[in-house]
Length: 147
Length: 433
Image (tube, rainbow over all chains, first blue to last red; front, side, top):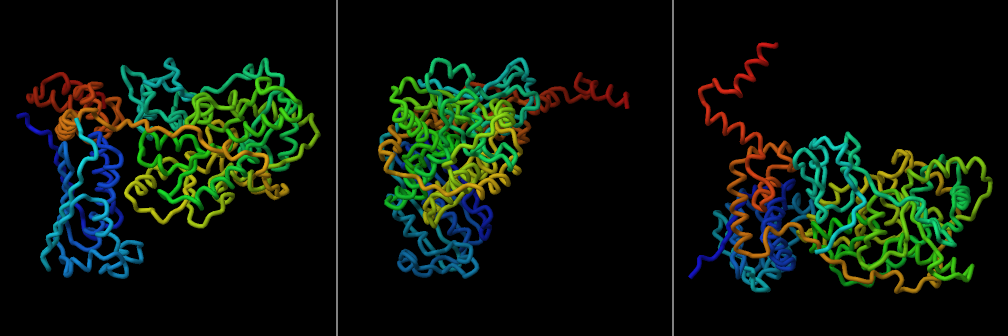
């Protein structure tokens, strides 16, 4: 059996840094494009990753976006040290938000993040501890078999 | 493998192999190899940035010779709206049109008038569209090509309508045929272009097999002749563009004509790239329409114009006030003549390899190389930045020793005694001071 080709990347994300929000997702996009993944898959991953990145920027103190690209799937972990999510079910509802007013004034935190992530991924799991932080695991299945 | 026609070209005898052009190219299409710039045809989008920055004038734009008009019984000039802004503001567009009729053309059809039809078509397309939003205009050919090579995912957002130049060519041909009863082949249509990208759009259009435009003349080339004719010709032709059509020459003019609520008009390639990155992240879904002009200020900023773009922009405002408003008669234009005939195809340049495992191997190799490279992005290796050099190396187009900084570090590590040739050069220089 031959060893599977797998690529892992890890980018730190700074909480509260709105000026750079989205930069990490753009870097991830470039990696996925260079690996030759199909455009529609890249789009889904990047939209979800960007929402996850924004969640870290809006709510957490610090965190990271990790991705593992395998021939059959792409996995993304958005990990943060932050307040955690008190009610995951509520957070999943469209329009529900705990973003403070100054963040919403910037046009962020409309309460569409997690629902949009779910919509764009094939599998999503949230692990959260109040007062400690949140890990979001996302999986995206390749639409076509890669060679 | 498609071969690409390009208007932007290099005169090797003038190139000194400096790094100005490689650093400014938005698609990283240029490398300096063996002391001379080389343009990668697959990546070039004919934006003309390199022409603008080349201190040795080694880069130039190919435009058609006037002899291209020979053999046509009827010769139609299609002046871009920006053409009228090249002349003093007391020279009204009607006089410029009349002068063009004395410059070898039998007819003149204003692209700014055809633009009015395109604006109406864009507005109704956007209003009835279900997305994806934002919808992006095709009026700037550089932007269309930028999307093909760097933002293939956004091809779905591009409005499937022809740019005003192409529509003007159709309308001009129909009008001349109706007036003279001649056949289509007897008509030659020539665009007066502010930029090299439109020359490419004439000779290798995207979205269709063949342009209805026969050639493109540089505004800078035709300007002196028209300028002198203006002294002799005192006729004034009717002008159909109106103030709104004329304003397509500057950034924002198209959006004003399209007249939608949630739009953004953006100019300058750096700004456009930054915006498109955000669109790809799904962050601008509420936006309905983007007008994007590659040149700063819009077409008046094109490199084949003669007048300072800021002056030209002020003039547009003055000229516009002198023109009567004319609505475009949509009944003269069948809807299918506005539509792009072929889907826009991606020209992806980013993928490292068609084979996934091989791409992963190359990506890991790039990461390893990035650790070795100095990250100065000096361009001395001939690539625009360290990352591009690393990519070139894994693609087999460059070597690590092309990086003179790493090479120097390496030789210092190899000869730590301090008595080696590198250091004696330093010593000699110090003595001179």
